[in-house]
Length: 391
Image (cartoon, rainbow, N blue to C red):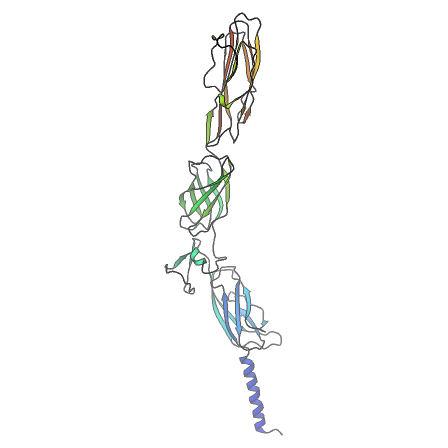
């Protein structure tokens, strides 16, 4: 028979064992990182326990969700969770049944703040954030804040979604989007000049809100062709949108060509005096009674048949107009003067090709015998982008 003092000793040993087991599996602390966090951002919940005994535990996230029960073989343990909405959540770790393991004892809690940026380039800083920032009141700049913490998922960068207005020099354009902030920043234009180089210019700011920026394209913008240009919106904190493409048209000019802009391809020299722009043949001193053609024309031709010469003089004249860099022919008008009804000038053929950059007009002429002449003059107007050469 066992003695009473033996029973008492066994009971003491059992109680000491239970106490040691309990103290070896107590949950000690829980932390959440990052804190604060953004909606739908991954949050790492880190739990620690005392001792070395494996035990069962779980996490109550505070948003209606609870983790499955799991073992706590080593410490610390991490569990990742995300929160759909902004708010303050109480996270608790507590013991739970997991297989044959004993439940972890005790519990621990912490609070997590989930918040969004205010959309205006600043983030509200609550008392829970102890950041080494210069005193600036309840708000700090985004750039200064993000130099201290990880801003991933917290910042709404500028985004251009659509635009309205007229894409030309002096045109007013509105850029619609989000994340522009309340403070005026910069809208930069990038475009390609006619020589292939790229230039940038800042647009004039007419209005600035978090969702709309009104601008004006500089009226002095020249030297480029019709193209797809791009803009970027940049906030004072240094956040910049992606490039947004739009149709940029140039201001147009109209120019009247002169003879130096036209090439003489062929001049008919069947007459006694022949002249096609700067190309001529014949003795003007002998045939001085032939008058020159109209001044200021891009194309002018003159052919004369001397008095008493037997037979008609006739031939064909042809010219070439070749433009580049978006310049095209806007109009062509021809003046003709014949000394009698027997003289003829047919042309130009073909007629002026409006909207085209190349023209090769020809003129067929006949000057009858006697003191007879044919004259013609064609005035050519071209149009193209301002500040861009046409040849």
